[in-house]
Image 1 (cartoon, helix red, strand yellow):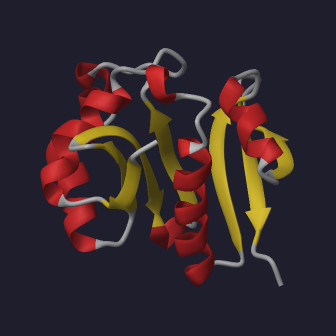
Image 2 (image 1 turned 60 degrees about the vertical axis):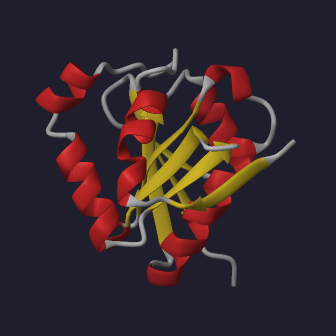
Image 3 (image 1 turned 180 degrees about the vertical axis):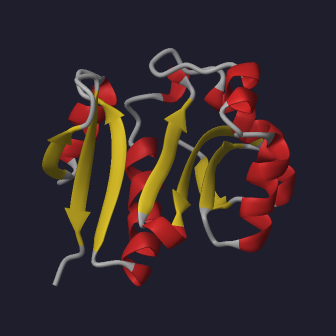
Length: 146
């Protein structure tokens, strides 16, 4: 597998949005994201101003990404194209996000749907302390290793 992972650059924004809109679980269209305030310019500014995102590339194609909100201690997003799932890419992207989060915080957190594959994935990686948010979504936490 020739998948390379690197820090995201401003020029990766369109590829990040392509991955985000290609997933089947927790799918959002670009229009739905815009209504939530998640626009290409917002994500581009985040990438320019903070060490907050990583992309997985197969040759020059972005096939996955992870993104954090450094100031909040949050793993904000992790998505991999469906045809690249179950190859360890998500695990590698999560590890990079965790490393950066734990440089700034003792505890990191994320929110996901309780009955999703993502929830099971994160729990397998040691995320826990599950708190129900609204009957559909849960908050998971992970503590920095001593």
